[in-house]
Each structure stands twice: as structure tokens, then as C-alpha cells.
Length: 464
Image 1: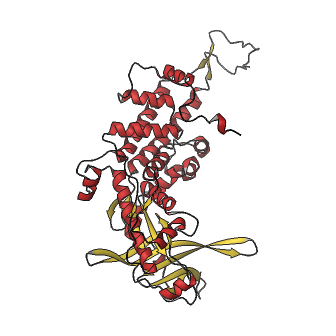
Image 2: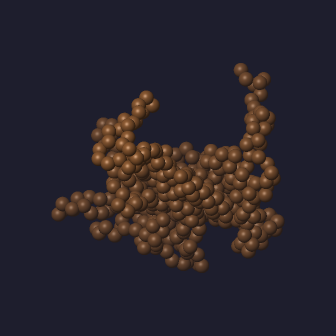
Image 3: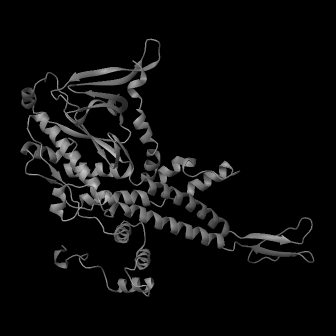
């Protein structure tokens, strides 16, 4: 067997070039430090020791990761609704949709994080393996049931498809998986395998030693299913084709890296500026100097001894640069919440919701609804039901302007601890929401004197 079963397709490879950046930003400061010079280049002629020290103290402003989590959470600020047309058996499955204790709402929420960050994910509707079970009647008798498994970016290696009855359907799918097996009395081995799915059958491949002593990918297991289709559904952030998408916040990711680099420069110059340099002018030869609060220095005639300090101009320029980048990141993240004219929606959606304009995040939520509906249908197919029904996500969160959207995002970033209350006031003044004459410091002081916000105090009668 060749290694072709493990290789990524060209379409996957093209998408994958964006994933290291997104994953590093989602991983926070630790992941960005591990990435090293990939996102924090060395300066010309910078010694490795100096670079390592600079990298070790660099900290990430988590604009990308927090914006992803805030935006991905909006469709799930209210519970996912399972329609009355969903069969009762499938409704019971939804309480533990992955057989790992996660309900459909939580499972779909994880999918949305994938879509807003990397732009792609997928759902496999699988069935537990069972010895000797080959018919639907035997499945029911054994108490087996379908379950869902999430496949994020990087786990789909490639696929084949064809159009049937006007619909593109998978004819082959290769998935990268990690299987965990017992190793000794207490250990655990992580084994990489490739699952190949085709209508009505499946195979798994693992590495093994060939007769020549070399590692090769070879058939591990195979079997058949009662479902004459590949029960997998692609989920998209910003779709560009079947199985293909790009991260919808890619520009924000690049801006966050720009901030990471500029912030490192700022930390470095602050370190230099805070340590004044002692300069001795006009002395010839060696002069022994002792510096301290209780010491004096004897200098040669016409010599001068003084501390040379940074003027601070570069520090202020760096500070302004960071503010500018932060403002651009806020605007970029807010773009997903702004309703756009001419967005593609159905007549039913327009008549039921009163408007035809949709923001990008609303369209993503609608696409995820469609994917969940497809997964529900595959689930119904597994158990012999005619219709899997539909699910509904909350989608009432679009904004009419970029100013309105960014103002909303500002409040959520402050609640997440990314920006300060003072910064919110200043930014709202810039947008004309608050009066320009208002003093942020005075306002914060008065807010503190008002006591806790309404609804945040415990009921004294309820305290035991």
C-alpha cells in the first residue's frame, strides 16, 4: 500500500496554509511563543540570545480568539430549537448526540467556533461497530444508535464526489483519526489511522512494518454498513466551493499578528528607555567610577558625567500604532455583524423576519442550520425514519451599521476583560454615542459611587 491514503488533497493543502496562523492565535501567548520566528521575526543582526529573551516576554493581545468566541456564541445565546418534525427517537439522541455526554446545542456551538476561526468543519454521522450485526432489525435488537462526531480543519484529508439528481454527493471520503489503545498496565498509545468511507462500506488504514522493514500504510479493518451513502456533512464559515472554505476573520488574524509584533517592539523600547545610560564625556584614559546614593565621583578637568535618557518620542509613536491596530481589529471583527443589502435569502425568510438584509454571521448560522438538518436526515436514514426534521438557531443579532456593530462588540470585549471600561467610554465618544464633553475618569468614579449594577446583588433573604 502506498502513502497516498494519508496524503492531503490539493484542495485541503490550499486551505491548510491559513490554519497555523489561526491555531496559534487561538492558542494564546503560549502557542504564539512556540511558533517563534514564524510570527515574530528576528531583527537583522539580532543575536539568538537576545531574540529568545524578547520572545520569552512577549504577550498576545487576544483580539482574534476573543472575537471568535464572542461571535460564535451569538447564535447560541438562546437554546437551539429542535423542531416538532424531528422524530422522538432522534430528540432523545440529541441529549447525548456524540455519545460523550454533549447535547446537540453544545455540539453545534463547538462547530460554530470551528467555522468562525478556521472556516471549515464537518459532521460524521456514525454507528458503533457491532459483531454479527448486519441488518436494521439486528441493530434495533442490539440497542445500537447513530451518533455524531465532529471533524475540525485538518482531519479531512480528501474526498471524491459526483452530482446525482442535481445534488453533489460524496462517493469517497478520507478522514484522519487518532485512536487510543491500552499500552501496558497503565499506559495509553495514540495511534494515527485513516478512515476511508464509501457508500455502504468503510476501511481503516494504519502504519505497519513492511517485509523490507520500512513503515507503510496498510489495511487495518474493513466492513459494510446499511447506509448506501457517505454520512458526512461539510460545515462552512466562508464557503468557496464544495468542501472548501476560508477563515471569515482571516484579515483580523493578520492584524492580530501585526499587533503581536508591534507590541514586542514596544516592550523592547520600553525596556531600553527605562534604563538610563551613564555617559562620561571629556575624560581620557581609564576613570574608576562608583555610582551610588552615598558616593561621589572625582572627574578630570573639563570632564562631564551624566545620565542619557530616551526622549520618549518613539514610545509615544509605538503606543499610537498599537491603538490604531486595535481599532482596526475591532472594526474588522464587527464587519461580520453588519447587515448587507442584497444578501441571498429565501422569500420565506424575508416574509417571516420582515427584512431581506443579512449579516455574514447570520448567513453562517443559517448555513449551520442546513448542515444540522442534513445530519438529522442521515440520522433518520440510519434508523429507518423517513424525515429527520429541522433545527433552528437564534439569528436576531445583526446590526444596521458598522458603528452599531462595533459598539456592541466593544461592550462584549470589555465584559470578557480584553479592554477597560475607560476604553469603552472613549470609543463610544468617538462614535458619537456618548457626548465628547464627558470626562471618562469622572464618569467611572460616579459609576463606582452608584454601587453595583442593578440585578447583580444577591437577595439578602436568600443568603443562608
